[in-house]
Image (cartoon, rainbow, N blue to C red; front, side, top):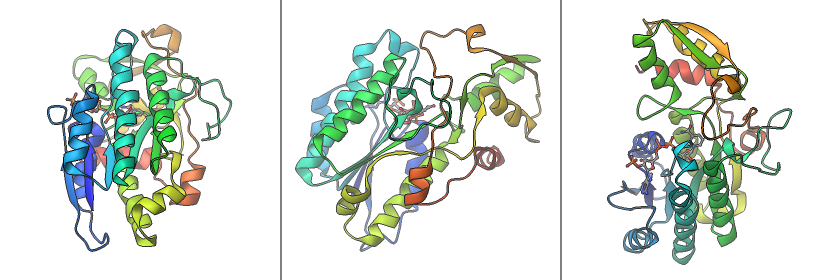
Length: 298
Ligand SMILES: NC(=O)c1ccc[n+]([C@@H]2O[C@H](COP(=O)([O-])OP(=O)(O)OC[C@H]3O[C@@H](n4cnc5c(N)ncnc54)[C@H](OP(=O)(O)O)[C@@H]3O)[C@@H](O)[C@H]2O)c1
């Protein structure tokens, strides 16, 4: 079993590297993981993607790399589409040639946020931003190749590395006594460990049922993979500062999206239904439990 992991230094890439190390009980127990960064495989360069795929010849590609600068993407549309749409297409095409499968990650930002209630996999995407459009184009390109795949849509990703809301809150609280936080966007903060753990458990579960590629062909597709329950950015901030390990506890003020304008519009309702995932695989932890576990690691 040869697994190619892209984006190894990203927040999800790091969690996947750690979790994949613990992968055992697969087939004959032999798992080889090649984790690459942008110097080894540049997703803005299709030739670079093809070269790595052809030389390593993986059975499974896990694409944790992405152009994730949501606001900057409004000015860098070509680059966002190259990394988020064209590269996944090339990885999928090369995987088809090798008889391999692809696991890819997408985002709540493929939706416009207008729905009352949680978004399901059947809902029609309508992204508001360049980033969202580029991620949707990636989903569509993968699906069109016919490669056995999972596209896991996730949301509000955080960890103890990289750039994310949790670390931003902790950094800002060092110098500020008051923080204004958006309270009218709804979603599920999702710890990278939740995503990495779920990814590996799905691989293990399917591997036990037969040849992995065939099993992914059978049960693959788009799945929403986020922590259970929902909150707002304001609610997320409140929980972060409620943890006993956090010493600087600023006063929090709830504000509206309009009071915190950003270049890329965000969906008001980012809540993704995980019913499909939980029926097919297993129950996901609540965001509160995952945040607690993450902060225990601080
Ligand atoms: N972050 C979120 O809140 C969020 C929400 C929903 C969905 N997602 C999705 O979840 C997945 C993982 O995101 P993440 O939060 O782990 O992102 P991240 O921390 O920004 O990591 C992205 C990784 O992609 C790499 N990358 C970017 N451009 C590249 C290129 N041209 N060639 C090769 N590698 C490149 C980056 O490399 P460098 O380290 O060299 O920059 C980085 O390692 C992505 O598919 C993302 O769209 C994220």
